[in-house]
Length: 364
Image 1 (cartoon, rainbow, N blue to C red):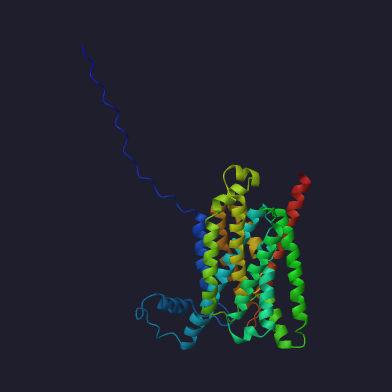
Image 2: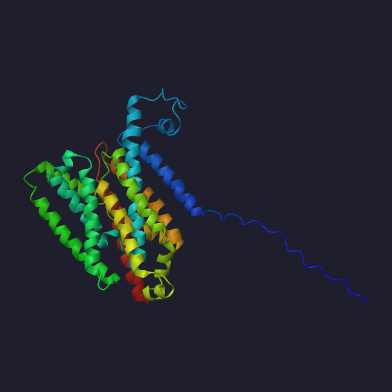
């Protein structure tokens, strides 16, 4: 009697992997950014009807002749496309850059109270801009002020890194102390330049206004200035998200897992310098964005950088756009400085974080 061979089991049909759904938070943040940009173009010292804004934007985004703009006045065309749209785009790029830089700094220093200002880039950019205004270069060409501010930001970072690095290693604590010390030194030099300009009231006023931060008179040229640097900085940041997650375990643990710790530090600092330098170069000094926005996002979605970095980028862009809308509308037709608005929201939140950390420390 022969036994029939049992046929091998037929494997179940392969099921195509389903696309991972996009988290609701990112959809919400993206919609919030689009709505913020539309609000930023519509509202200001002179409100423009949403239908008019949509018509003008559509006419410039689709092929010529597809959208009829005959019902739109010439003044509205100029205000929407040449004045407010570039201003809103610069605000979005500045907010995204500062928030993304802050998220990286908080991950690198393992401290949710860290911000891009710690390594001297903001102070360096401010010093370069003040020099450009004081020497009259800013009045000669639109490019001198952002160029000097950006180069000064990179120079400040290079100086901090050179001071903190010994025998090929850059301790985070030493980097922090070197950044604080150099920031104070650059601030003193900036104050000296300002004090020498008191006799020239117009120049001194321009310097003070720039240091308070603002986006008035921003054009498409400024968009072209800041966009490449922010794009490059963001690209660098998104390539080290996994390594930043591993660094949260500590440098020794990260090194044992094969992470090139010192190389990642240099990469993160380069990204932060590009983002912060480009942002400050076109907007002036705007505080608390890089501190508050990443911390708010972290409270909602946790510390994983693969989600923290893009979410901080989107929320930072929306935050600065809406802050700029408030700066334009609170005392219209006059404008408040943007740095005042961000500080008014950021400083109370910073104090809340300090009090919360002190309470948690006391309980533990």
